[in-house]
Length: 551
Image (cartoon, rainbow, N blue to C red; front, side, top):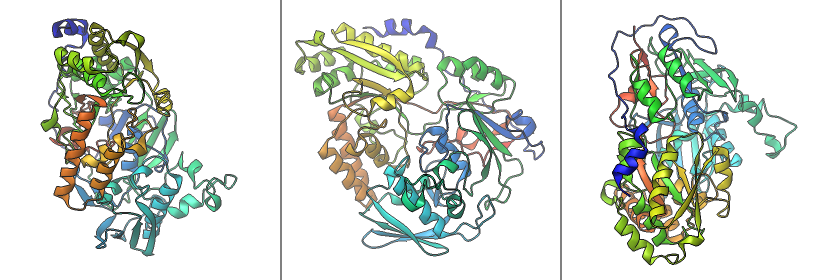
């Protein structure tokens, strides 16, 4: 298979996104309050975003990109991150760790109020952690097995008691949304005793309400259609006069509608799943730019290691050598860069630049295939490759692999699959396809975040891992690294785990996929969009408080 042949097949995708510089201007504080469906951004100082819904609005359960983006805006956390992912104090002013690493004591601010006007105290922090651990959904995997329980020892001191040492614990707390305990427990569904005397723990109520203290508070919500949040004027951090008055997220996915709304200013920021054709068209609009934020996402072709023939390491390596990476980053996702391994270069401890093992090489693919136990009966197998039906460009990645594999006698069937179905398929090795295209991101800025979520045995059976590795040695390497308090040693342990994964080749690591969104660069300044380095933390880029509108 020649590259020029592939490029010809994909000729519609040969235009790179045009990155136009945004217009400047003087910040303004004028503008009227928008309604729930929003007006234009310039008129109302309002941010309108499209996304795939429904929403999972409870912070203990939400895990999608848009769920987590809203949490960043509606709730406060003990620590926060700078744009580049640096952890900084937030609700917590400072903290101490016991010599044995099993007790964390946080001192919190005494000047924060929730949206209902009540005061945020240490007991609310403890409640939020204990609730997340009990419910065990969403991002609870960050603390499950590590945190025993949390307790408030006075109104401004919260203590976390650990089951085992967890060196990255402070970094994970950027994900612990602090809930108003009194408000949540006043709204439990007493007919539901799922959690004993906690009843439903407020899950039903929190699906359409917030109990936060963040910069924005919920005004109106339809979990399948939209959510509108308005500025919390009594927020404890300073407001700039030209900061957004609020934001609306709407379920709009049709490309033509998105282009029209961006053109007339009704849409401020698009979602991150637009096709390259749409992004190219948006980049040509006056006053519209397209972001290129590297936020830690690696586009992956995840191979099921427990199903023949992808259970064979040499067969997997053959597929990795059959993929034409250059076509992917030059034509399909124009302007992106090749992924060098399991961990994006955005994370601390990544050695992607050092690895970069696999490239398009038919001769090496033939060598690996000859070593495979399936070399003499390739015709007995037809590989199933599934990709998200919501992400059209992934089909073209699948076609690249299908075409190259066919030349070596490997048959691949391609299926566009609803995301909900992909999640269901991940439940067992038998229902998981041979290859699934997925683009995972994660929760804190170290390589261990990706290694634990994507490749540890504890995540097998979830949509974060379609490989079904179940490798005890790798688990040991990851767990040991996460427990290591010495930063340099922890980074070296991450490196060893990445080398180990590179040799196993459970995944075709395609590209480092930037978060590409069209946005109204002529209307407002968006710090995250213009930063050279972005936090590799899913949802962090849509933090609206620091956006500045122009005249």
